[in-house]
Image (cartoon, rainbow, N blue to C red; front, side):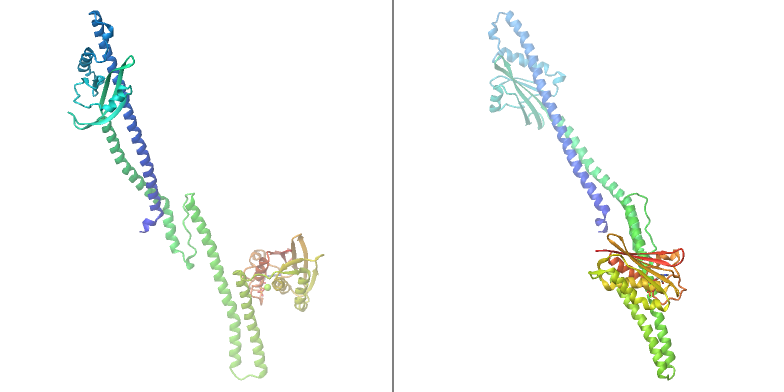
Length: 492
Ligand SMILES: Nc1ncnc2c1ncn2[C@@H]1O[C@H](COP(=O)(O)OP(=O)(O)OP(=O)(O)O)[C@@H](O)[C@H]1O
Ligand SMILES: [Mg+2]
C-alpha cells in the first residue's frame, strides 16, 4: 500500500504508460507502412507482369502474322479480336512461357472480349471468373485490382488480381489477368506482428524495472532523510540531515531543511533560556519574601517591625508584578496582538515629557541632562504611551549605568525628510564590544557581576516598540567610555 502511493511507483507507472503509448503508435505506424509498402510492391509487380505478358504475346502474334501475310492472308483479317489464331497463339505462349522464372508465382489468364478464358497458365484452376459488372468496366478500358479469397485447387488463400484490357487501335482486343498469392506478404507481416508483440511487453517491462530502479536510486537520499527526520525531537534538535552531493532538488531540500532546523534549534534554545531566566527572576523575590516572613513569624514583633517587613514584601511584590507586566507586553508584541494606536504626535513635546519624568532620578545622582530639541515640529503617528516607554527605557538605562555627576546628552533631529532620530548619549560605564550584540536579548544583562536591579527586559521592550512603529534602535560604544543609543522613527 505504501509502495503504491510512493513517488517511485508513480514515476515508474508514468514511465511505462508513456512508453506503452509511444510504442503502440510507433508499432502501428511501422506495421501500417510496411504493409502498404509490400502491397504497393505487389501491385507494381502485377502491373509490370501484365505488361510483359502483353508484349510477349504481341511479339508471337507479329511473327505468326508475317507467315500468314506470306501465305496471302489479308491484313484486315489479322485482328486479335475474336481471332481463332490469336486464341491459339495466346494459349501456346501462356503454356510455354509462363514458366519464366520472372513469372513464377504469377498466375496468368487471357480472356477474349466476351469474357471467355482463351488461355490460362497451368497453375490456374478457375481462380476467377470475372463478374460481369467488373468485366464491363474492364471492357470499357479501365484496369482494376481485386483481392479475393481463392479456394480452387489451392488451399484457401488470398490472391491479388490485376485485370487490364489490351487495345488494338481504339478497341479492346483481349484482357490480361495476372494474379499472385498474398501469402508471402502475409507471412512477412505476421512475423513483424509477432516480433512487435514480443518486443512491446518486453520493452515496457524492462523499462519499468529500470525506471523503478532509477527512481529508487534517485530517491534513496529521501528515504534516509525521512529516517533522520523521525529521530528529530525537541530534545534532539542537534541532528542534521546528511546533504547528498547531488546538486539537485534533493540536495536543495536537505539544505533548506537543515537551515530550518538551525532556526528552530535557536528558537527552541532561546525559549528555554527565557524559561530559565524567568524561573530565576521569579525565584529571587519569592525566596526573599519567604525568608523575611519566616524570620518575622518566629516570634512576636513590634508594630514597627511588621510594618518594615510588609513594606519590604510590597517592594518584592511590585517587582514581580512589574516582571509579569513586562513579559505580557513582550508576549503581545510577539503574537502581534499589540497594535500601536495611530495618533498624531509631536516628538519634541513627547521627549520632553519623558525627560521630565526621569529628571528626579537623575538629580538623585547629580546627573546633568541636556536636551537639544529639533528646530521644527517633528510630527509622527503612533502610540503615545508605547513611545514614551521606548524613550523612558533607554533614558532609564542611561541614568542607571552612569555614575554620579555624569552627563547625558539627548538630541532630537531629522535624519532625512522622513526619519526622526533621538540620540541618547551618556558617559557611563559603557558596554563591552562583544556584548553589544546581545543587549536587546530578553533577560540579557551585560556583565552579570554588576549588581543591577533590572530584569534585562527594558531594551527588548524598547526594540519591540520601535519595530512596531517601523523604526529601529542602534547602539554604539564610545571609545572614551559611555554609550550612544539612537532611536529612528519614521515621520508622517
Ligand atoms: N546606557 C547603558 N550603559 C551601559 N550599559 C547599558 C546601558 N544600557 C543598557 N546597558 C546594558 O544592557 C543590559 C540590558 O539593558 P536592559 O534595559 O534591557 O535591562 P536592564 O536595564 O538590566 O533591566 P530592565 O531595563 O529590565 O529594568 C543592561 O543590563 C546593561 O548591562
Ligand atoms: Mg533597562
